[in-house]
Amino acid sequence: MMRNYNLSQQPDYNCSCGRDFSYKTTQDEFVVAMAYVPWQNFTEMCDPEKGLQQGTIFPELDLPFYGGKAGRRR
Amino acid sequence: MMMNQMNRAELLHWIDVVSFVVTDMTLYLDSHPEDAKAQEVFQKYLGMRKGALKTFAQKYGPLVVDSADMGNNWVWCDMPLPWEGDCR
Image 1 (cartoon, chains in turn purple, green):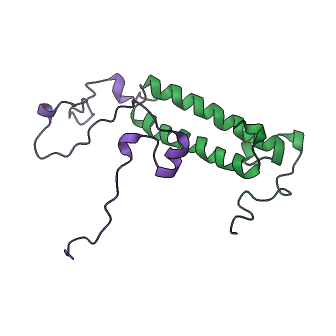
Image 2 (spheres, each protein chain N blue to C red):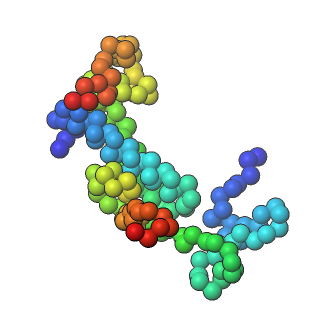
Image 3 (cartoon, rainbow over the protein chains, first blue to last red):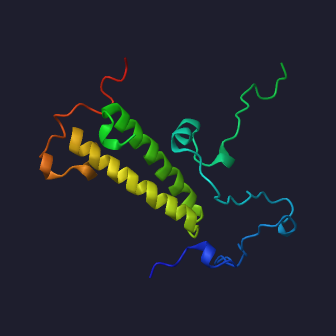
């Protein structure tokens, strides 16, 4: 039987290697020196035409692009 | 604008628009399988995509093999390619 890899049904999903992968969302629960990505929550979607133009239908992901020369300050 | 009033280019664009929503929502649902609201939006736009492909197939011939039905027999290779005439 294919093992159910649906993480969210097992909030305290323990990987076979024994480490705890439970969903840590609040600030204080995070381990120092470990990178994390804040969890995205779908609230609203922008107009589909605009979504196609800007490259995402999620307003929270429509971020400005600050292109520029890395390093050397001009 | 209703789909059947759209010309070929408009319908192609509409298929791009709804397909993009389906793709973006798929990515979101991959990491948020439990999100009911997202599933609802996904189902809605998936239906719109299928409807648009079906309309396109009826009017101009199948765009993708999924909407090729033997009704319009095998016109697949006779119809202009979707991007033809685009580099004006």
